[in-house]
Image 1 (cartoon, one colour):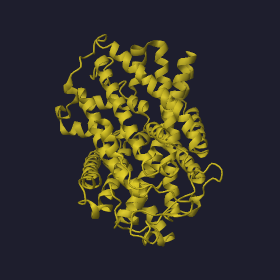
Image 2: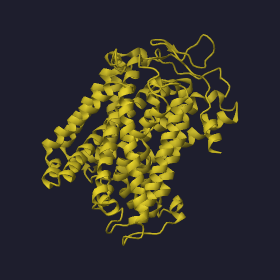
Image 3: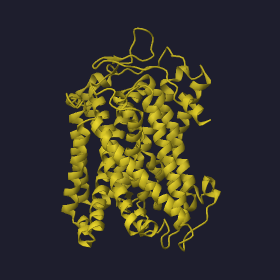
Image 4: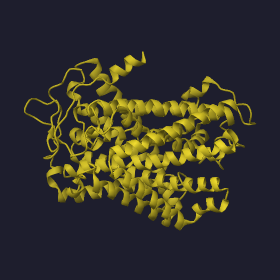
Length: 531
């Protein structure tokens, strides 16, 4: 049954293999082109497994679990596994949209390129901006987490509290963080082959250690005062105590899956660019949802989801669950492996998260939506060299400034991330429906995978976007700080989107051809290759 579903889900329509500099022909009438251009990236650099590993790495499952298990348990209690499944659903539905659009336009600009083709240059530009700014925020946060765990691990290994305390020294913390960003930038700069090799090791380490933690947590279920017996009711999302708690938990869950679309950003460098990225995305998401469910269930059985003792929702430990559970669950020796896994998770994601932002910037500049200087591709490594370096510099500057200005501002910026994620994912889902609107009723498959399912995914994310926007207005959301009585998370989130509007207007004056629709044309395919 699973094999059949896999084959139906990723049945291909067309494989496009253009030469560098050519435009990519889509499924339009003979003589027409989609106007999609290749960028000179290194083709056939990544296979199915490598692409899936990049997707898993970008999500950073161990980092996501240690930072959100406690928060999610605090919102929904024992229904945490159900929320993990609920968050997986809109991601899966949006993945259908990515897959269908990638088949006809395997372009590294992904959401930017596709929304331009569906809705025009301005909406497409803002969609690209949402992806770029969300990625910069995540990169800075990942670098900060990797830095903290670096010194925490150093303290555990050396047995010195003074070494671990170096992370509290702001100068040392920032310097270490900038060093990690520089190393990750350099690895990404050297190309997909270098990235892939390192990721196999780091992702493999994460999953192995996570498996050990799950096994040991299950073996110790009932050993702690807060342990609880397993119940199938944990899988029921309707048992959540309130709608507000459900949406809060869902927002956290959606964040935990963000990043799988890095598989799509490598489509021009992947073997079988029309079908391999979609298959890799499914593999990545199946691994993620399986890991999240197994860890959530095992952790709840071992220590429960309450606020006392080792309970996952204990406010003193909920922001870093694995640091609190490493010793009690895995023992002093194996517990160190959990610290290593979190560091590996953050470091691996820090490296691969450069992939989508650099390639989105490359695509935007190729289509003249950003300065042309970003179109430079390294002649040997075949990577968007300047875009990668600028992304690294922007991440370092952003994190340094936010850290020096206020820790509260840094926390609130991270909280605003969910707004960006829902924004560009939902736009991409709706772009799929609109782009293929002329063929939705030609077959049941087209209606389902190009229309109904992406529309449902986009609608769900739009609802989360609206609810998050409403909640952000309250100063209590995030760090609790406010600007003229308005929550600072709202100010930051909306402010970053408005900053995108300002930059777009500047680019409109510098590059009028793109914004007139002369570079990428808004259209609907008129000739459909048989499903």
